[in-house]
Length: 84
Image (cartoon, rainbow, N blue to C red; front, side, top):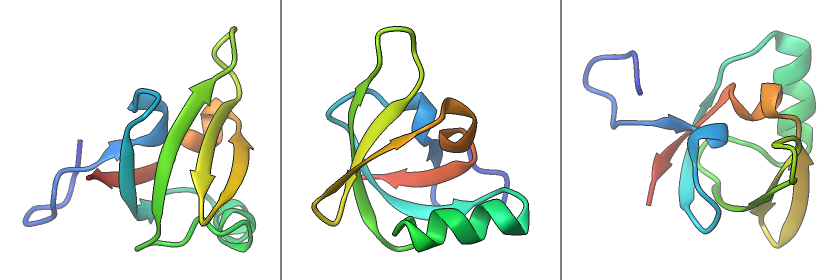
């Protein structure tokens, strides 16, 4: 859940279930990783949908702006969304 007072409750993408959707609230990672994820379209304020998880749990597929992306579970755990 969130760690900042007054902020709407958030969850990490890896805690979402397939079919769930949310709006990206923040990305908690090193600057190089944040930059790469933002270049892929994972920008705060953007809506995404959790599509599916691979059979062994990694990677996780999300749909954002009409594009399907596969994220490592370690990356997905650093992207926090506000559920819709």
